[in-house]
Length: 150
Image (tube, rainbow, N blue to C red):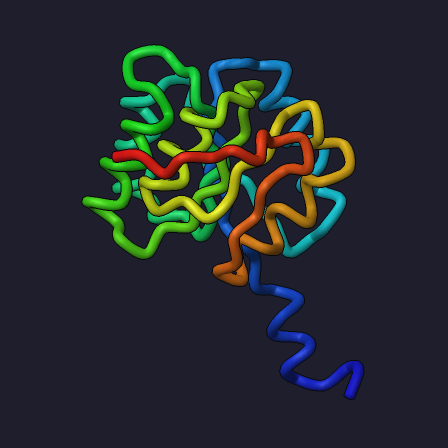
């Protein structure tokens, strides 16, 4: 029933998001997209891998939007460390890298999604929603020959 107490409580709940990407322009893109849906709130941004791991451990966000190519520690290593310190983390990789080996290695970490930045304009919300529902998500532009590698 609209207007019920449950609906009002949901209104004030939010998905706490950490954005880890070394590109200020892409962080700005995400910062412009998330406010379109009031249930999402950016709680932190990180511009390098080590900072991302520290912030996740500290803040324990509901969702981590993680770039692959970052300074100090790449996204795959970041994801591995995150899953060691916060095992239930929900990670959606955001990358320009379409290499099947890289995508496979990223998903092998335990992340549920891989979104190509070139597809973000149309697949941003479906990717986020799938990962939050513990479903696997792959961009349509991802190479279909993915090899899951440690």
